[in-house]
Length: 79
Image (cartoon, rainbow, N blue to C red; front, side, top):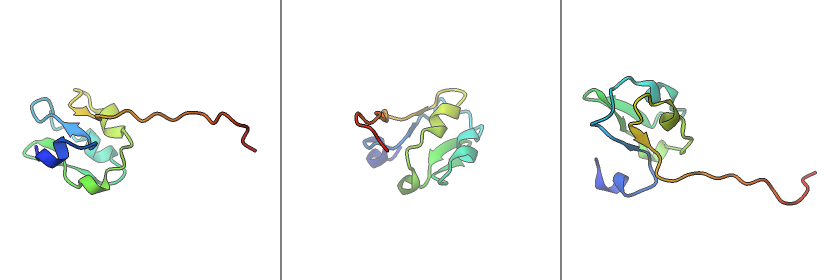
């Protein structure tokens, strides 16, 4: 894996675990993922919006998002 991508917030895809099913590639709304040599890859890292669909859909847990996105409810009334 590219060292720059490995050390950033981008999804990490373990090529030793990936079975190349392509579920993540089909589900990716931005086209950031592709398959190469029978495994998923982050082909267009600048397109990744960190939505988490790839990680959630991977049947073998080959994709890991290194940071958790937390959305907190507003503590004041919103009209």
